[in-house]
Image 1 (cartoon, rainbow, N blue to C red):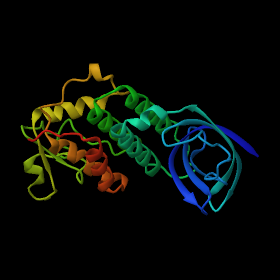
Image 2: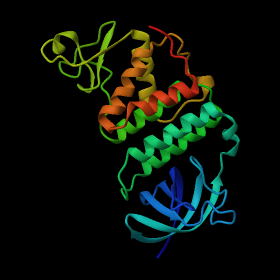
Image 3: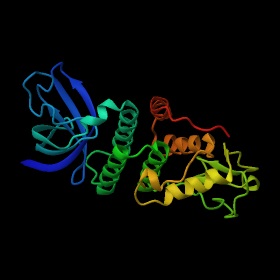
Length: 256
C-alpha cells in the first residue's frame, strides 16, 4: 500500500554510490527509513525536495525490506534553503535532527516529538537566542522520555536548594550536600540565576521569541554543561555532538 504523511528528514546517508537512505520523523508512523533510488543522479526522484529540517509531504510504499521502505514521491512543504547561508543555525539544526532521530525507536508513533521538532525549527529561523532554544528542545525530549530533571528541590529529601545548588545527572536532578554525602554522585554547582533560568526554560510549552527571553549573560556554563550530561546519560547520546554544536554556533558561554 502507498502511505502518505508529513515528514521531517533527520538523517541522510549515501547508499550504493547513487542512492540515499533517509531517516524521517513523522506524526503518524514515528521514525521510518526510506530508500531513495538514484538520489545522487542529475535526474532523480525528489530532487531538491528534501534536506535536514525540511517539512515534506511523503509518499512511500508501506512495505519494509530490512527495515526500509521505498519512496514513491516527495514534495517540500517548508524548505529552509535560506538557512544554508547561516552556518551557525545550520549546525544547531543538525543537532536538533540528531536528537530527534536518536530519541525515538522505529515505527513508534510520537506526535509530540514531531510537533516539538516543528516548533524548534520554526523558532530557529527567527531567533538569535540559541542557548535558550537548545535547552528548551533538550528539556522537551527529556520530558517525553520521562526523565525530566528535578530542578525545584532535592530529589531525595525535597529540601529547598541553597546557593549554589548541586545538579546530579545520575541522581536525576538537584541533590543537597547532606543527601549526597554517602552517595557520592558527580554534581555540578550552579548559582541561583542559573537555576532560575533553567527552571523557566523547563516550564515553557513552546520556545519564546528572542525579544521575550530574558538575558542569559549571567548564567554560568556549568548549568548548561550539566543539562548536556542529562542528555548523554538518559538518552544515550554522545556528548561530542552537543559540544560540536556549541562550538560551531560559537555560543560563548559566560564563565562562572
